[in-house]
Image (cartoon, rainbow, N blue to C red; front, side, top):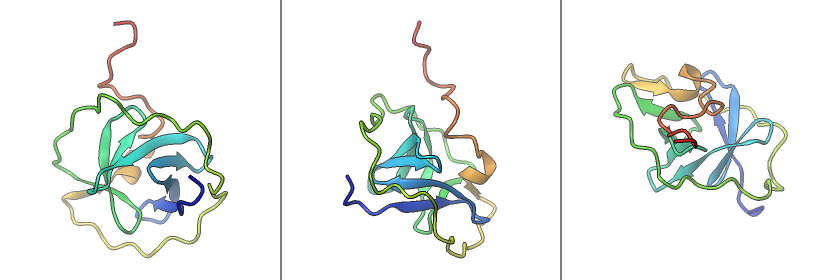
Length: 126
């Protein structure tokens, strides 16, 4: 896993929020928070909840009117070991293009999205 180059995830204003070491996403403290799936670069929380698509400039974006997708039945498991190439800090962010009104920067709108459990996941006791 250490041969995969880290990809930095930022907000539109340039705050570093996470790092992708494909296919796993880690927050700035190195905690596993989600994963990327498929050619369309869909981003999921560790619970398997779809939150948006990873853009080429390093933002997680979604259409404002996007339908919620069903939870993935088998979300990607937490990696057994943190990648050895997980950085302690990020380089300066690229200059971000403005977003049209119909597109949302997920990490600006819901900065705690990776910290919460999905409200769509059934309780373990049920």
